[in-house]
Amino acid sequence: MAIEAMSLDSRKKEALASSKVGHIEREYNIVSDAVGEDGCRTIVLKPRDMTTLKKAKQELASEICRRLNETGTVFKKILMDTLKDYKEADILQMHKRLLLDEKPPPVKATPGCFKIILGDGRKKNSHHISIRE
Image 1 (cartoon, one colour):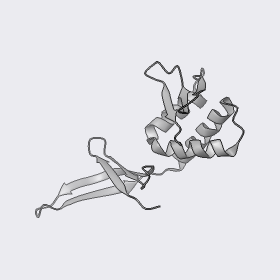
Image 2 (cartoon, helix red, strand yellow):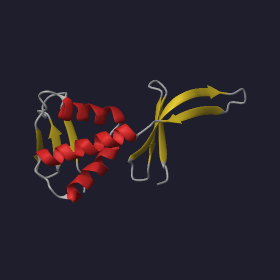
Image 3 (cartoon, helix red, strand yellow):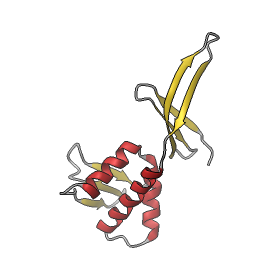
Image 4 (cartoon, one colour):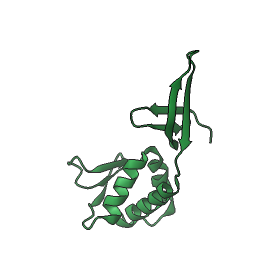
């Protein structure tokens, strides 16, 4: 898949590469960001290893499907597609809270504009995963 846009955050030393539909396809660490004498800016990026993130996404999607009693593969594929929009830190935080905490938060689905809520929903530390059409 071709990269359509790239977002750079020099404060956090990271870059995100997005596809045409807006999914985050790749993540990078910014190794260096320098401006030459001629005014040409050179940014050196190092790709992040995404294997642990992919595994965490699969485990998170499986656990959400299990808790919502969704046995079909289509829902899991849609959820995996939606999780492409989330940064690594958010995925790992949701994974930790749902699978590794002693008292995991409840998982519920709201009707209408379909949304999966991890946690209370009214509190700051809850996560909302919106499933689009």
